Image (cartoon, rainbow, N blue to C red; front, side, top):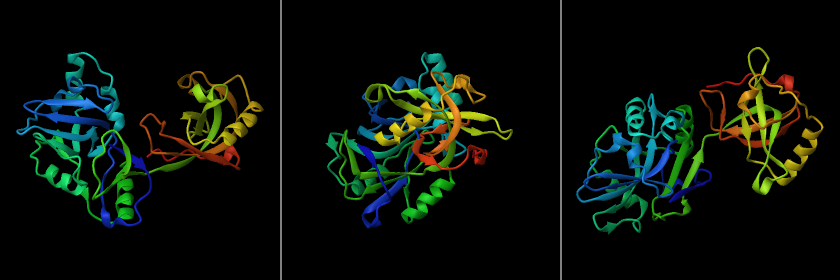
Length: 306
């Protein structure tokens, strides 16, 4: 079951709130050993040996997230080095250097009994009765308080957002349902358009993504990522016209090697992007285009990287 993007529910009476974790979705099949399965059905057990110490009698099935915590806060960046590791030695080394926690947020089966027809509130009660061994196995806490206050607190803590879950909602395997609504904390930044990359598929022959930059403390432009979502057909057509008139052969940024296949333009256009966070490398995470701003690029200041 997948969460649908949305807003905080206007009537909170029939909803529960949990943290939206920034990790890897996984199912945990627990018998006398653990089997971990990815969202697309692949067995990923061998990649996460630090989670092998759980057994269940009777057997049970969990839905949850593999999360790497850094100073108590989920960090997808800390998780990324483990996602493509191969070889038992390298995997074991990373399991010590960057261990993950399985954060369980639903219980789907116990013994020979399926629970997916039960309402969320009952599944949650049964989940909380499990004795999961810490610290590698945890249950996602159910949060107390008003939605707006919880969302503001999650943003202050550097969390990705909240999941609102209907108390009477059934579990719908493989489906995206508004019974689970994800509310993300988004940040906004002004950026300078410095280039574009050609599109593919439905965008073949058009702009695939914009290359955007911000100034550093010395006034040099630094490429901070590509923005490929948030456009309308009309906005893409308008941008294509504007950028054609601004094309140039040389990069206007000091770190152009990080942006292959770029079609460079003179840095005259300023836009606004929404995003979730700055990575440690200074790259926009999950950026989405919000539109052009009618201001001069010289007015853009270095961002707050925190």
